[in-house]
Amino acid sequence: MLQDNFGRRFHYLRLSITEACNFKCQYCLPDGYHGPSDDTFLTLPEIDTLVQAFAGLGTSKIRITGGEPSLRRDFTDVIALCKNTDGINKVATTTHGGRLARDAQKWRDAGLDQVNVSIDSLDPRQFADITGQNKLTQVLDGVSAAIDSGMTVKVNSVYLKHFAGKQLQQFKDWLKDTPITLRFIELMETGDHPEFFAQQHLSGGPLKQQLLNEGWMPVLRSKDAGPAQEFHHPDYAGRIGLIMPYSKDFCASCNRLRVAANGKLHLCLFSEHGIDIRPYLQQGDVQALMAHLQQLLTQKHATHYLQDGNTGATSHLAMLGG
Image (cartoon, rainbow, N blue to C red; front, side, top):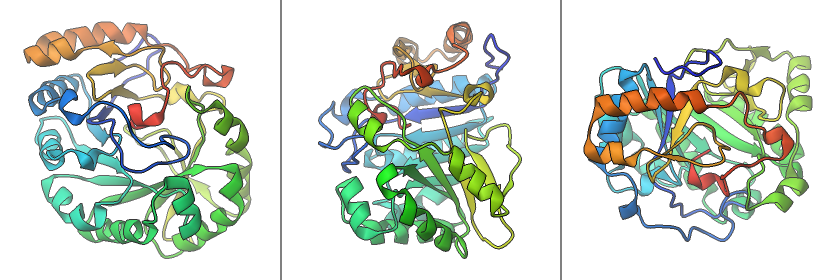
């Protein structure tokens, strides 16, 4: 089992397979993607070695991220590889949803259990303003297709100051009859966007208290759950989750590690640097990689220090998929 010096166990791997994305979200890639091409990122055999090693060390859940992972031509092959690895019980992905309506059933057939879709507003104009794409209807059609395919569906919405008021009520109305989990994510400061953070960051603490006052009740966390605090209400088909990285003890329940599309292990989303494990992946030596990963876990810190304004090496979230 992968375990650090603080007794935290890591059942959950977030695997980025590309940094590329064709949306232009204000808080991530407002000027579009201008990085390396996909042929520089992890190959399918390298991903196979990586997944086998993590599964051998107790990882049971893999989330395939980007950038936008569906831009990889072999995306369904990556899903199937992860799902068919002994020990991996759940395969998820995070997507902007632009291809979901077309491909949801294909991804489900390949083995995808859960999809998280990024929707920062249900107002078409706000959605286009935030993402640089006038595709809200297309994305919502994708959410419906994913539900119909049998996948668990979660929607991620970055909690921005300029959009929080009206947006919150629109989302709650949507949850009345829509069986998804909506997670509001506090905006996190990254190296490229300190001014945007200062203008738009909004704490989720008051929202949590509001939900409790309205009768929303906490949901118990599973061992492979992400960082969200989730709440349910008897009058709603959907749930609400809050991801508050600036809250006290946020890192105490950390159960996930990240590998970037360039083959670097990030012990934290806001690590000072990634650790290059690609030579092990290129060699295809699963046992050697397992031993190396166990040794590297001794370097993981108790907290991300984000609350101190330390954004580490993360210049934008497309580098690691959040």
